[in-house]
Image: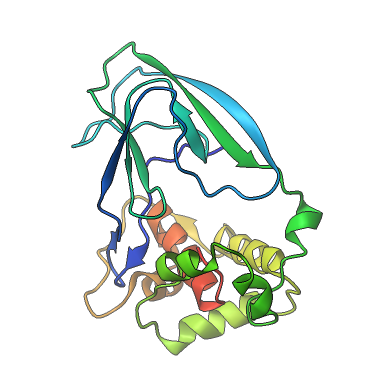
Amino acid sequence: QYLEGFTFDHFDGHTWTSSSSSAHYSSANADLFNDVIGNHTSIKTTVHVLLPPSGTKPYLFGPTEPVSFNVDSVVYGDVLPTAWAQQGSLHNGETYQVISFASSASQPDLSKVPLPQSDLNFWQSDPNYATLYMYYLQKPTLPLNVWKTVQQWTQGAQNTYQALIDLQAHLSNQSQFTYSIENPPVPANIDAVTWLLQTHRGYCTYYATAMVMMARLLGIPA
């Protein structure tokens, strides 16, 4: 499982921000809002703090999706949770527990989800679709070559799962792309996805951004 700290949903071509700004306070072990639907597995994780994260908020971490912490917490987000933090500061040697609900959907389960362009009614029948549409389909104006790349990379994909696997395979192809923490700045007149496709190098944010924008171009909330 990945450790999730906070979620950005709005991309302007260069910078990610969050549409959600409100904060909700919750006492220890209280049930937190979650949008888990369908089969899931409950996971209890114990986190030992060796070095508290720096920054303005004492973020709490755990496998997605956290549904309770055994410490007083703050949940950020208007409709969908975007971040979890402790009400007080985190300290060296501190320990806390988090309960998470992780999806137990199998590959065959996921392969049943059609591409939005093939069956939009399937997607719109999901009670969360309006919220997903609002938060996770926004994209800036991207050049036509990005869309052509998406079409090329996902050609032949019969469902959403396969299309995402195809995008992942291309972006993680080390013969085509290089992971680098030292990169020239993205020019002001070029978006970060186009820049990655031109330079074929970048660090995690470049690849995550490209993956999300390409999914959204296919109509897949990401």
